[in-house]
Amino acid sequence: MEIGLIHYRVGETDGVSLEMTKWKKVLEKIGFKVYLIAGDMGTSAGFKIPSISYSNTTNNFLKHKSFVDLNGWNEDQYICEMKSYTTYIYDQLKELMNLDIMIVNNIFSLAHNPAAAMAIYHFCKDRGIKIVGHHHDFYWERDYYANPTNSYIRRVLQMYFPPKDITHVVINSITQEKLKIENNLDSVVIPNVFDFNQEQWEIDDYNVKIYDKLNISKNDLIFLQATRIVKRKAIELAIDVVSEINKDLKKYVGEQTYNGKIITENTAAKLLLPGLPEDMDYLNTLIEYAKRKNVELKLASSICDNIRHESKGIFSLWDFYAIADFITYPSVLEGFGNQFLEAIFSKTPILIFEYPVYKKDIAPLGFEIVSLGSKAELKNGLYKVNQDTIIKAKDQILEILFDTHKASESVQKNFELGRKYFSYDMLEEKLRYLIE
Image (cartoon, rainbow, N blue to C red; front, side):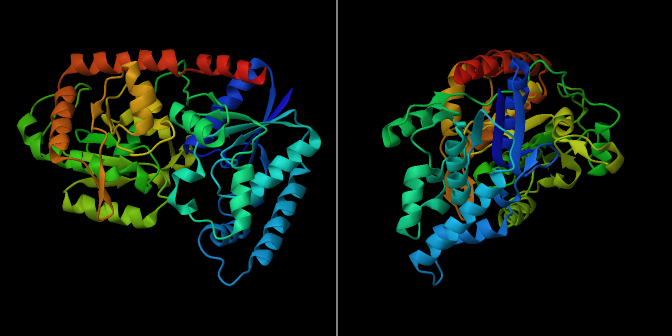
């Protein structure tokens, strides 16, 4: 059996790309032949369809016409251009290998490219290819898609986002319930997973060079924000906590952290961000905010990829986890939470804002984290939680940092829970059921 995994992009460090790679590995282990198909291939091998890439100019032009402003077009002109673009994508799909199943990632749920959704749906139906919609995010969760500009795009959203007659996979129970209530569609929940059987990420002769590359002292405390830099990640909450930690560090001069760092008069807690900055306005706001809060940001996307390139001085995302002392994950909205799984695999303590999916699907399993609560307000473009919550989180983090037994016990417990509930073995069981 031959299976295609399709998305706007693969081979990068975003959650969907990472999850597609995991599915490919597990499906191949089961015995299927699997192909990656995308608009941008990143570092992955596969079949490239440029017309569905995030950066495709035709799509971004039509996307603006669909959800922002028709800018002088009438609906007939819009329909003509959308159908033409759909046909263009359909024709590119004709070059694909013969497939039995197409697993469509987010293209039927996040309305970034409506023409791609229509083209893929009809291409698969015309060739008898069974369709699985793997829905990570839905357009109704994003304000951008809230006001379609014409009746045609509204019909497209009703018919193809998602289509009624395909198999649906979602990554959390909140979405499963909403899809049933609002669309009367049944779906299977397959959460994000991680390979808990791989070798642990450890400091080695190569990734230790990150310290010098970014001008970080060996005794500085590294708080790792491993996500992309977008507003819903609420990175300002991590800045708030790190700022409070820096105020208290002088009390710990001479003491040793759980992983052997000695606090000196010059030790500082620094926030390390190796993720892609996808919202430059937000990044600039964070830089200014960190300056006001006396927190040093270490921006490292230029030296981070999903794999190492030692000849170019490029590190993998996992190298940054290896040198981290604490993980920050204050995101206010996630479909599931790849960075959470990465953090617990890395056996590093973690600070969490309890976003809805974490609170409903993950927290009941018993993970030990430092919590920022589950209530945040957006003020002047930045998320805020109660200052008492920030102080409490700071105190808990400092307790963990300087208590080797507590740190070791909690991260090992988290690792074992992760291996139990979110491993490749669990994914294999789910995928066998799904394909059958």
